[in-house]
Image 1 (tube, one colour):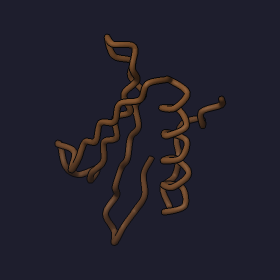
Image 2 (spheres, helix red, strand yellow; image 1 turned 90 degrees about the vertical axis):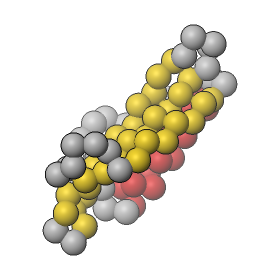
Image 3 (tube, helix red, strand yellow; image 1 turned 135 degrees about the vertical axis):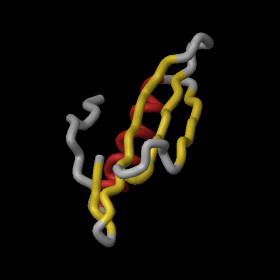
Image 4 (cartoon, rainbow, N blue to C red; image 1 turned 45 degrees about the vertical axis):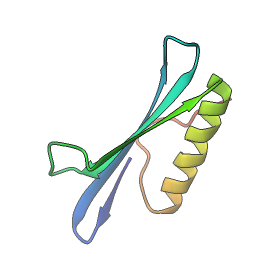
Amino acid sequence: MTRSVKGRVRYYTLELIPNLFGEWMVVRTYGSIKKIKPTGVIREIYDSAEAAAESIQSLINAKLKKGYTNRCAPING
């Protein structure tokens, strides 16, 4: 997802990753397109894929309200 703020393009990515313990991790990465390294990375662990998917959908909706454009399909549960 991307948006322009004061002439700077910002990005925000979301990943859903299973771990070796049967849990699911949501990884949020964000920063400026011009920077090589991300500004921040946030990792959250969920007990089920459904809970993680709900979290991702909630985050997508919040980012869309802030003006980000989504370049991928929404999660259909």
